[in-house]
Length: 106
Image (spheres, rainbow, N blue to C red):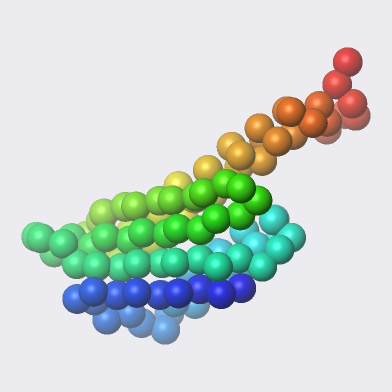
């Protein structure tokens, strides 16, 4: 997996990097292919932090931007948004294919 971290006005700790990497590795396993992910952190006004995650895979573009008062919280919220988008895209593909958990659709 290739992860590009960008930080503007923020010092990224190793713990934050590792946390984001482990969560993104779970997504990579779900897709079964190598991902190139851009993760951007920046400081906004009033001690707020922005986190943005962006990647393309299988013709789908996944983007999440969040704002919070804590870097870890902002990254967790962005990952939650990405996971929701991935789940929705996966469900759409399964519905189009007609496969269900119990076998083929009637």
